[in-house]
Image (cartoon, rainbow, N blue to C red; front, side, top):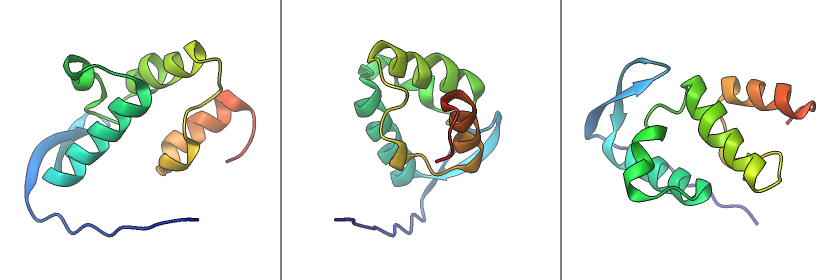
Length: 97
């Protein structure tokens, strides 16, 4: 069973993507932060660590550290859609997604 949702977010907020300025949809950003925080087990005060999903430290220090602690190679692979992150995950897991 799969579900898809299209969100047209017209209100934007300043954000970062790969260390660069990015105008993110306000709802889309809050949804991503909320889902990532839930999946990664972050507390409210730790959400600022995942503000830039493309930052290497987000992947290495947060995503992979959480995966290691839970003794899995990765949490919820279907939620990651960006090719750069897929490439990094593939390199760490040794298999293609």
